[in-house]
Length: 114
Length: 113
Image (cartoon, rainbow over all chains, first blue to last red; front, side):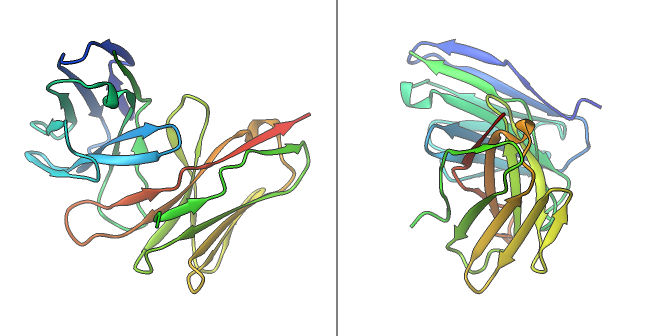
């Protein structure tokens, strides 16, 4: 049981390039989330999904797109990377919307946009 | 106003010390509360949930005061391994899809020998 995994662990992009971050979970969780973490800003929700085929915007969705074609995978896309998207990206999952349910995080992807 | 506020620290304490972290939240409709721990360059991990009656897990005690919208975490007999950033987390319990966890910026603890 690997929990939540993220690919890649680290990436350097040039401004304008595109890339996709992959998140996979093997806990059969319905809910998946993408966050970014910046110094002094804390974790901020980018997009989330409540099930296969559904996605929704979080607090900071601009410049990102997501897809949830399979229950176990949640993809985060950057169509045209900007230096402001330099950050650490965390994926998380949870089993249901029960209020005491915790979210399980992946190890993170460090992205540098030059 | 930031939804979840924490003293960023850092808190520098010797081994064996007792240290307390405080957190305030702005949304009175917040439904549930957590403390997460994040080690340097690692992902956040749940440390403990926080219940209205207060709860304890070994050396860690969490308290919630809904009237004051205040959450605390007490660590007794600090260990070197407690050095980390502690995130105060509030669940707004949105009725729509998903649960919305709001994270504080974290309080950094450094325990020295």
